[in-house]
Length: 117
Image 1: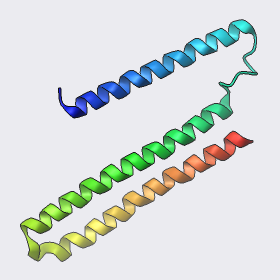
Image 2: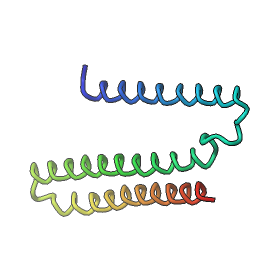
Image 3: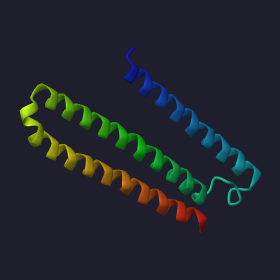
């Protein structure tokens, strides 16, 4: 099994486990009659979503920037004369990737602000 398949399988298993535990917690809260006063309300999920958004933005952005830089450096190593034609689009691509990461941070901070209300 390749590392990528193992990573996807592990992520899917963890997501399944996390989702099922939330369902069981909701059922127990409904039986107790305390649905409105539990920790599993919209503000708690907004805070959880903010944490996931920051983690996903950082992980995705660094992975994409690493791959883009590696591909550009490999192209420059194979053809040093093409360095100026490769470097400019690479820097532009890195800036666009970074803007998506910053957008993820903004969304996370907005969700975190909603969780504090």
